[in-house]
Image (cartoon, rainbow, N blue to C red; front, side, top):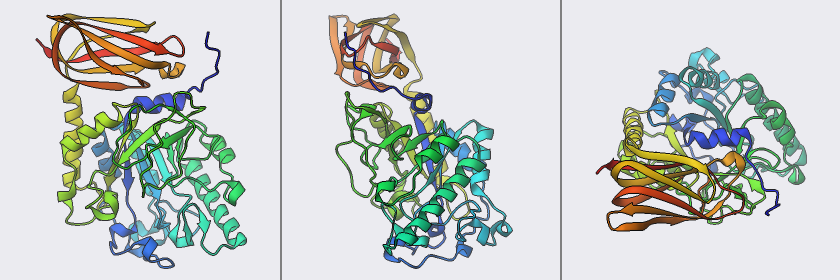
Length: 436
């Protein structure tokens, strides 16, 4: 009998896995001053007065996200420029020091309210590792090298995160792009603050000791296969260079599933990697077919898909992007419009007789991950007119594994769980396609 104590997800982890698709929303000073490149212009930041999204409508943002099938959204409240989308008391570089809305605007407040109105879970990104306004670069080191300056910056980080984690209610996901400089290297001590103020949130690239998510290793939303939820390897990378060792480990000691992020505009051709808007770049939108393939390579491989959403100088999701998000959501739904049968259960074999023969093109497997990831190897058989045939083999299931097939007519299916570390708990075994 296996007596090894294996990691289990928190309730927040389980809810996050069920969410499957999210968006990450970028709006910053370079949207209004596109010549600005913070790493090429250290010591210089655009005047906050350039920030003038006069038609800003966070309801429109969230509606566009929902049309894509997103059930959670992460707002980049402070990116690497240091400009803050809420009236922070930590420094002067924020919406409070602009003439936009007479200095009374608070985009974080508006965003969270829009999420609540439309049933989308809100999350926030606030980089602790980079702040050009305060002369700080990855991994959160003050460029002067002065210990007093570092301590002052740490205090700013703690104040800003306290504001964000206190003033806007319960948050679903917190993003630390580039990780967090640990106290042992002079950084702020954030886990006690996080666990006190947002204990239910899952944390992307956050400090150890919190309910973690890990980067998938690229910004193409392409999870490796297998992609286990448990791992021994975490990353504080900022996405500039790909990392190939983040597929997880079935015997890993940390539950930290992978989130697969990508811009919705071409990362090689569009402005700042496709994460920010620039006029005249609608032609760089990824096709709906490309986004659909990314869905299979992320959600279909036990990861979540986090799509970039740019906000234009009006303060809106561009019209072309909004149409693409809606078309992508419809394409995903169309792929799984006809379920030919589903089953669930425990044990090493699960049969799925179909009500009538059908042409199957997709199989969906899901474990009950609240009990952990237990399956290590599986085989799926289909009963065809010529007898039983092996349709698919695999290793990791986790929250969800989607097997795509050349359409095959079957009258029955059987899932064989050939290897597991504990009795398998299959939440769903489902077949999709069309009637024969």
